[in-house]
Image 1 (cartoon, rainbow, N blue to C red):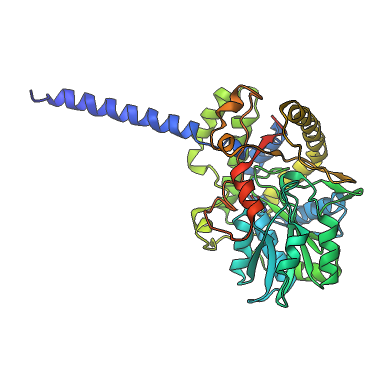
Image 2: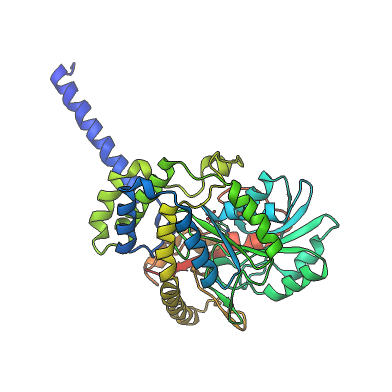
Length: 416
Ligand SMILES: Cc1ncc(COP(=O)(O)O)c(C=O)c1O
């Protein structure tokens, strides 16, 4: 029987309504939970809201240098230069070290794609090296096998906020072989080794304030050094770095508001959805499709503008407080591990990790299907990293431990 025109209109409207509801449900249920940083508070929202009304303050070198100065003092480093991401800060390191096309750098075979990308963009050859499975850092014995006459630097990382097991052994190996050390402290801002913040033992270090990290400006990063010669190189890179365009700054400020209401506000289950839907076109994506494909984005390498530096200053003032909470949570996870028979992550002697996440190794099946976690511990773990060069599926040969971590390492949150 033919459908009357009025009925067709009704069906179309009903269909559209269903489509909208499906879209909203899919949108809300998308897997963002692992990217949550819970250090944004209402005072950060107030800063973002004030900035959104005051475009004229968005670029201001006195505020930008104030953050640089405060970060360097807090981090016990002589020099600091803030950029709009950890990866841009790594590019500054590559420039300051004068790495050239054809030079080689040793990098963990278990990291985020943006790390090798920074070297690829400078045509520096990345040589992947296996990790150990106690702190997921570079294994010093493996590094020795990869040093060639072309090796110029080693990039070590302190993953999940742990201080890497072979920290001092790697620094000593580098010194003996005349190699530079870049410390990837993207996960470990504020961690200590022998009373000094990590990042101060190598030649250069970079930190991240991306939204899943220790402190949060949605996107951001800092590079530090204690070497005056390298600081001159960093300074040259910084002077020539562009500012982001106003759309990007505005977007970041809106994301502060969304993230606070979505993940931190006491009524987040109601307000979060409202704010997320309101700002859905502005929701920030940590790594763009271009970067996943290895293409350098056009706004790569920007310096941190004043609008974001004000947030960074506020976040910096709270890092120690939140890191204390993370350490307390890690103690609770320690007890849980003992009860469940899991191996605790290693805390290197004389170190004070910050536990961005609490990583453990579980059976492969348990990483694939996390449904067990709803019963005990009733908290869904994160699965970073699901590939050797997260999130890109690229084979990294000769890194069996990194492959194991990809299959078996999960991590629990330390701030709820
Ligand atoms: C280990 C590691 N290093 C570096 C970075 C880069 O930091 P950013 O996102 O600020 O560029 C990330 C980012 O997620 C990371 O996980």
